[in-house]
Image 1: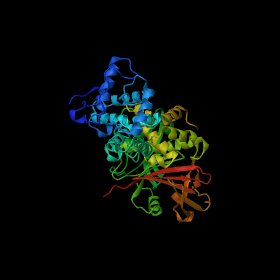
Image 2: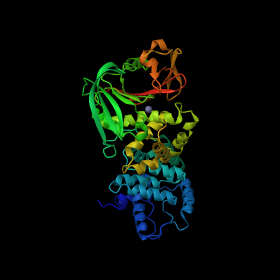
Image 3: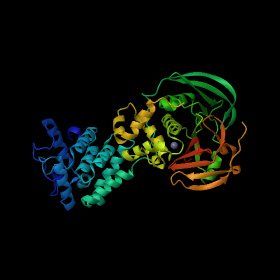
Image 4: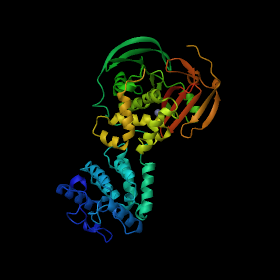
Amino acid sequence: MTRRIGGAGTGPSPLSRSARTPPPPPKGAPANTAAAASTKLREARYESRFEDTDAARPKPQAGAGKASAKAGAKAGAAAPKEDPKLPADVRKTLDQQLALHPKDSAACKTLNALAASPGFQGMKEADQQKLLKYVGGTNVDLSGPARSALSKKLGSDTFKKADAGKQTAQLQKFLTDQPATPKVVAPQKDAFKDTRLPYKLHGPSNVKDIAFESGKADAVKYEVEVDGKKYPVYLPKKADKATTHSIDEVAKGLAALPKSSRALVKEVLVEGKPNPADAHWAKEYNDPNFSSYMTAGADGVINIYPSKPKQSQDYLDGTMIHETGHTLSIKQWGADDSDKRWDGWKAAIKSDGIVPSKYAKAAPSEDFGEALQLYQQVKGTPKEAEVRAMMPERFKIIDALLAEKPKP
Amino acid sequence: MSEPKHPGTIQFIDGATKEVTKTVDAKEVPASIRFAKDEAGELVPVVKVVAFQEGDRRTLREYGPEGQFLRSTVQLRNAPR
Ligand SMILES: [Zn+2]
């Protein structure tokens, strides 16, 4: 199989050129391009837009014609009749997203099919941008599953047989519901391998009668030094290694936190036994199958409970970021997210549209915890730009928040 | 540490709907739930527990009488055995 620039996959096969398929655009008549190279690239992509996806083929229908004409006028008078009817900026985003997948022809196919659908062309430009940024990335958290779900949608009869207006409504619903978004922000394998700060361990020393949440017990105390500050960490004297995090794992967790969150940590208690409150919660929520994993208190104390099987380093890192994120956001904007100080974050959620996880929809404060975890997981990695493009307003607020000196 | 006086009841709230699902007598819950430390490390009564759940994760956020945040606990569904 030969690949085209931008990974757009193979060219149109003879089979794919059905009667309904529009012909390729006239050579040398692209809209909004000056450079010949760019022209070629676009033509290649244009052709691939129609390969083998029924959904990609604009069908002759009243609504589509109107939308096309309107968008065509926007794109410039010189636009060839069959050129996808997209505003120049949207097309630019499409090209950028296609370029992210030089080796993934399926991804390009989906993006091209989307762009060529009358339903997409009927969306508002801002929503076209959001949708492309959402389904066009290479990140496995959000864009990967979203693109698979969209691909299914585009290939479904409900979509293919719908007129332009109904297609637009379906895409709009897809963008609003984000059905493929994971339940919670998934820990990324080795997310902090390169970004975690170095740490130093001091100790251990034996200490008596430490007030663990799971009961008073003798403990070993370490001090984890990160970025010039020491954090006391207490571990049970006799820990079950199969269920209890080690001092190194906890130290790594501390070293992966955003600086502002770490500044709020007073100490960490690695509990040797389950949270005694679990039995009560089980009764309260009528479900015996939940166990406490971590508590972050307003006082800066983090309790980490045994887990079976023991959670991974990545999970520990992510959960610490999320949980201490609550302490951070509450310090900034108040404990109740109906507080006026939360308005900026709420406006950012609304403006971004894309959510970091389904769980994030539970409350603005949970959205913050999830967004902060995702932010920290991609910060300084090649994925940062594309995740930031999905949540630009939230990332801006987090940038500012983490740059600030934490409030005393 | 000596326990402060509890105002009497604890409200359980569903974070998704914001509805009060239950109001319980504070005497009916263990001390470890009845009280939690505030920012200054002082024990204060817990009067509100807000629960958020999504799939295998549940978060319980506990608040004091002035609406102050006290602690957030993440619970995970036990692995099937
Ligand atoms: Zn949370």
